[in-house]
Image (cartoon, rainbow, N blue to C red; front, side, top):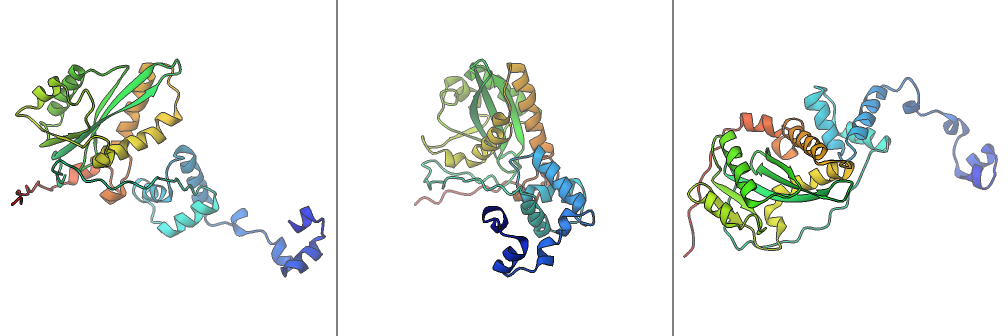
Length: 277
């Protein structure tokens, strides 16, 4: 700054700040071919370009589990910052809410499946409606419907196929109070088959697992693509959900993918009795 702004010589600038001229002229090892981390830095830059919404922990998990490299997480963090890949995303503070319906603990697979809708649009301005459903315990994505409009009858038909594909319905399905979810068709379909847990109106934090999944889908897929037609949206969103199941490593699952965790999981559901006096 002294050399560029005040037009001082290198000698005077170094003297003013108390810096040795040899130190000033020394090239950092990271900028030389002798850098022992040059290959790792290049890998991190490539990973950051392909996955701009990921942080250093996800990069470390990919190195450890996908690339089978033994590398320290702190070192990955340091190189991640030095390469300018550090990204702090502001998340608004979540409000604390008290659900008016009994909360079910998804302590095993096929206990609670969370269901929700999301909206996007093609470049011509026409709406795209997306239905997603995940198992709250394994985090695996179970449903992919991408249409201009999704009726209650279409939702019921797809749920019936999904239940058959995954070996039967769960104990309970968690959802909000959308018109498709409170419809007579869905109520009739779920009777004597699967319980329905409606969250209180205006409290999306009570359906946090599917909201978190939708947030990832929005930031890492929908916001990064412009759909020219409905077929393109179906293919790309379907690929994203498949990637979520087989490549996305969750820290809450000890950095396993949902598919890997579901294959290893041996947890069984333990019912909790009512304690109301």
